[in-house]
Length: 363
Ligand SMILES: Cc1cc2nc3c(=O)[nH]c(=O)nc-3n(C[C@H](O)[C@H](O)[C@H](O)COP(=O)(O)O)c2cc1C
Image 1 (spheres, rainbow, N blue to C red):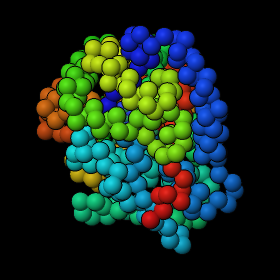
Image 2 (image 1 turned 135 degrees about the vertical axis):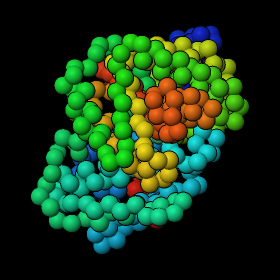
Image 3 (image 1 turned 120 degrees about the vertical axis):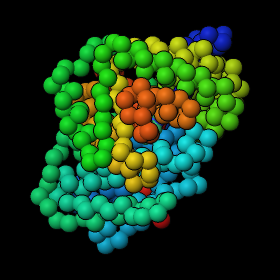
Image 4 (image 1 turned 90 degrees about the vertical axis):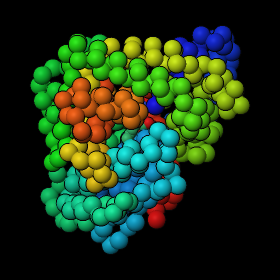
């Protein structure tokens, strides 16, 4: 996926004055977005109940912010089920990202429950669309740090400060991501980052040349605060550094500014500004392993947030099948299906993305 960049928008000739005027007109609704974000991202009260744990789960990262999950509540159990109506068949034809997203939500729920004194037993069911069954048991309250980072974590799609991350922090990130049957490679050397950048640019170019990819992506972009608030899902333009626009204007401008060369430039700048890249590879390619990848990645992202380190996906090399095979060979894992590519580094926060209400995701 690649998103609308402010630079390319300005390059089309949309003047600062116009953008500023439109921005001013949208200001009251931006306040509404911020208030809703704050409401959705508050930490839990002492005895929150399962629906509140579900709220924490929904703050997880998920592809295109489709929120492809449903939650079934029992007495002391939560089942997380795929919501296949929220698939993204072009960028994610085998539901890989969908199951990774369910793994991220699982991890948030387990971490929040642990912080409040509930142990979790997680069982991944069988089949092509396995349910994730989580049984809660009384336990001593666990680590607070990762839990408190749940509302702070975000996908930060901006330039980072270009500084390295210390070896101590890299070790903490690696330890947080440790998960059976999933390996994580941290690439911080100049040459390996440059090689990975070449894969991102090649795969991004292939996606930008595919009208179905662009159409699917556009369908999930929320240009205005009103549509972001109304749907509670999708990619709100300011979360990617673009100005909020009225929907009619956003839809008209987007095809003119979302261009291959500008997007490739943006990815080059962003990757070069990052301290490193993390590549997640599971032992096998099936939904149960993809859920594990999601759990591993979410702990990585939360540990990063604790350390003041930002993360953002650059998954293009794992999304384009022809390049994925070559990418796996380059990684030294021929035959494996690399799962995620994530850049990391330090930068100020961007606006936070919205979620649908808990009532909308209960099965
Ligand atoms: C499996 C998966 C794949 C993703 N792929 C991309 C991607 O290729 N590019 C990108 O900018 N964000 C990607 N994201 C990030 C989501 O767009 C992001 O999590 C979602 O919009 C919610 O925003 P948040 O992470 O700030 O809460 C991905 C997230 C997941 C879990």
